[in-house]
Length: 376
Image 1 (cartoon, rainbow, N blue to C red):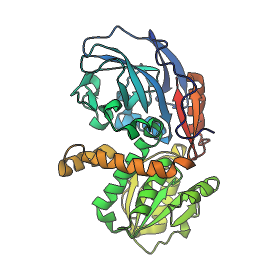
Image 2 (image 1 turned 180 degrees about the vertical axis):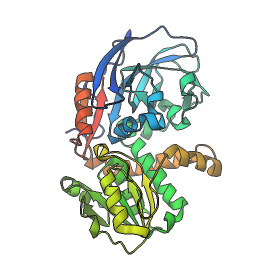
Image 3 (image 1 turned 90 degrees about the vertical axis):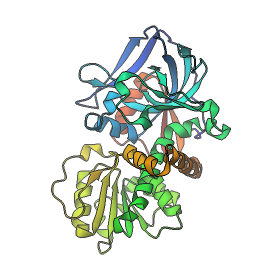
Image 4 (image 1 turned 135 degrees about the vertical axis):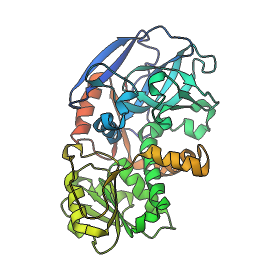
């Protein structure tokens, strides 16, 4: 295993400039993928061509695919017919530019396609970021359309490319859930149950709750037997409960449930066990996407989907634009530093290996201590 700061096996960002290699996913069956090679059209005025030399592959991407139609993730990088391109968080370099404000050599971090190249249309250009204003993305959440120009950022951030791809998007979501719970005074809950706490978003949230000395809520993580040791090593849970042992959770006190798993059985079990003491139930991820489905009528709070851009928009109005993301970035940096020694990077090289890793991820065959970084 390689440490978190490791580099890809090779750097091919100036190869294959006439074609883009992409992995397409069947929107009706996300296990089905195909490699697509498409010619890169001559750049129109105002656009840039970027070479994506690294991106992360996590359970977050599974959630994007599972909810691609209902929330709109397939719209960011459209494909043809019933196919879609799963968005990923990655780093890229501008290798051709028809935009005077974004020159060749600019380094970017943002929401890219599962591909070797992408064409962007920079707008609202600032020293440290721009917004992709291509027509089909204009009505999509701003947080996904903003690309950071990392060479204008502090050096310590420039040196954390793997962390920013692999951990920051997940830990930033962790922070927004953490903030959402605080913002609502935990809905009166005295304990927080996190489903699939071994997921990076799950243990990121657990760490933030655990490390906040102003909070009194206990943190309970639900996980599988094989992941108990990893969760224990993080030291972020007051209680660890195995799947199907939900009855071990104290049902006499108000509880907030944060679902990273998408496992409808777990949701039903917890609601039926806690009854009216389930005061909040929010769905975030789909690490156990195969066990998804409609939960039906349940006692306690009605389960609802947590949409991170909604919390960002709320805080932008209250705190001012960009403050929530700055706080999320700071929190992500802290947690990334805490868990860096517990995460090993495994590099996935080439589109065929990416397709294999995607299947392994769907089948929950990637250990929580492994971080998959892809170089096409």
